[in-house]
Length: 176
Image 1 (cartoon, rainbow, N blue to C red):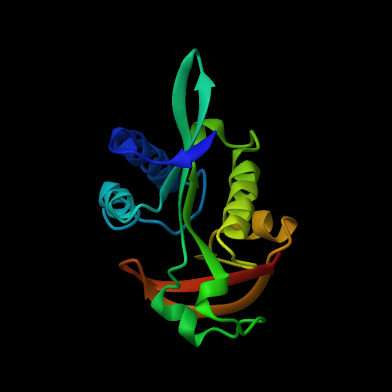
Image 2 (tube, rainbow, N blue to C red; image 1 turned 30 degrees about the vertical axis):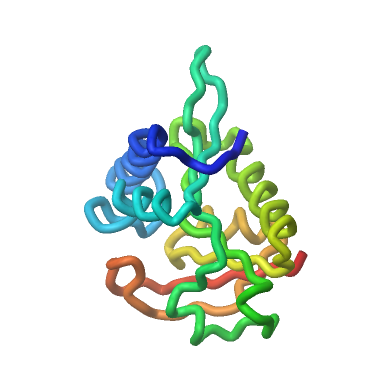
C-alpha cells in the first residue's frame, strides 16, 4: 500500500535512509547519497510538513512495515531550468518524483516498480501528463530501472545537489 506519510512514519523513513547510507558506505550499492547530508530525517520531516511525503508499506512478519518512501510534487528543482527537456510544457503539467528510496532489506521485491506505478497514477489524477525524475550519474541501478520503465535521459548537469558537491545530475522525463 502507498499512502501519504504521517508523523508516525518519520522514524521508519529515517531508517530506510539509514539502511541505504549503510549499504552505500559498505560498497554494496552506489547512490551518491551521503549520510549527514542527504537524505536525512530532516528531508522527510520537511516533506511531511509540505504534505508531499509518501510511504509504501507491506505486512512483514505480521506487522505493517515501511518498505519505501518518496516525495511527489510539482516542484522542479533549480537545476531543472538549465535542462534540455524534450517536452517544453508548463510547470502545471509536470509531476516530479524525488528521493525514491526502497529499503535495502527488501530490494528486488518489486516495490520500486509499484511505487513508480503509483507515481504515474498520482500524476494523472492531478492533471499532469509529464513525469520528471533525477538521479546521480553514479546510481547505475536507478538509471537502468528508470530506462526499463520508459524514462528518457534528457540531460546530465554538473551541480551541487541537496548539499552534495560535485554531482552529475541525470535528468529523466516521460510523457504519459
